[in-house]
Length: 62
Length: 310
Image (tube, each protein chain N blue to C red):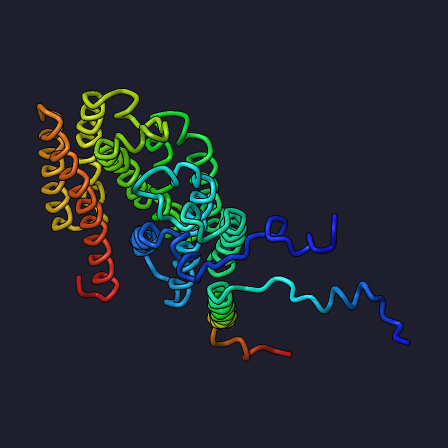
């Protein structure tokens, strides 16, 4: 005997919200844009940090 | 309520179809490019420039801040944008972006831009950028725009601040020279937008925006444009008079100022509606050329000066 609730099974077998091809394309394009944006910001912040630290950052007494 | 209602289209949120380009349109790229241009001029007024990467990152943050203001402006004005022909294809009234998504986008970018500028340059510049965004969104868009014909006179301060933000990002200070550039854009804004308002009187009237031509009439608007141009012409030559631009800039500014006065005079003395429309169109176009040329000359002079060629 299965210990799954029949209501849960019914819910999980449903198709749910089906995206139209246009919505899928839009979501994919937005995800790529967000990925590129975050990568750009990470590189920019890293580079700015290096510039602000200056070239002599390694020459310090320990 | 049956379980089926969980997936009922009427109760589930509308899923977005927006492409990245729609979000870029929300940033008002043309306004953004003008902001970057004027902020760069402010940057170049600094006696010495920071590292090129700091300049780039600061201008990037200022551009994003300007874009965020544009997004928040489009979010708040979506109701009137949907009515006016000039704006009804913007992403929110066209149904490509949900208003709540535009609001979230604008708020996140505002915060991101201010903290980025603070991190890459200094916190005075960041505070000035935050004030610029606040002034444009809250003071201009939410408060003055629908309240008074002085909307663009006072609201113009938001558009005039980028050179000050740029200068403070480079130096951590505010100078007379950057205030001079602020004054040029601040005095330039009313005649520029009132020329457009004359051309778009019907559209502004259809959404009950209290633009000067709709509230006080064409005669009063043309007089105000003339008065503002009389003030703008000498102020435009200010950078030369204050000694941070060359005589070449001075001659150009005086020549363009006289051209502006001539067109403002033509507009003021125009007799019938057709002539007024033509004169307003010329005035609008020339005002863009005026500001662009002055800032371009300043930028070129300063770049050549930094390169030791001028």
